Length: 90
Image 1 (spheres, one colour):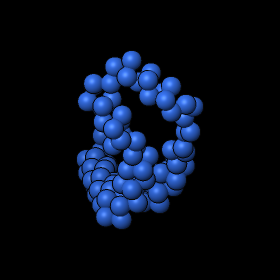
Image 2 (image 1 turned 180 degrees about the vertical axis):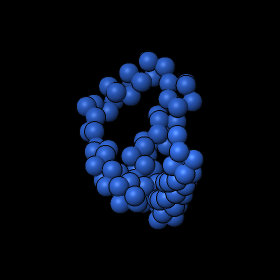
Image 3 (image 1 turned 30 degrees about the vertical axis):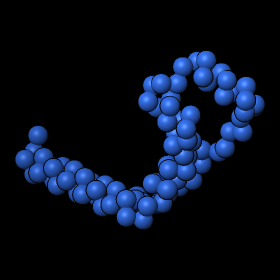
Image 4 (image 1 turned 180 degrees about the horizontal axis):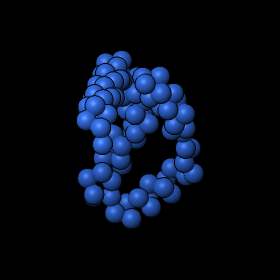
């Protein structure tokens, strides 16, 4: 209710926004998070991944691929590493 409090709250909010933007710039410039995301979703660039993303992968095609390839090996998504990189930028 105090004008000075509202003014200081506005300044604090703008400072927080500016700090967040600077941290995002760090993440973008060092590229570490981008590289992690690229590796995590690299299968989307494969033949079958592109087919699925394009909405053209029907169940019959996918079933043939699963039977051909066998049990998949699921790599780590490196979630913890992504969180460390993100937190380090804060």
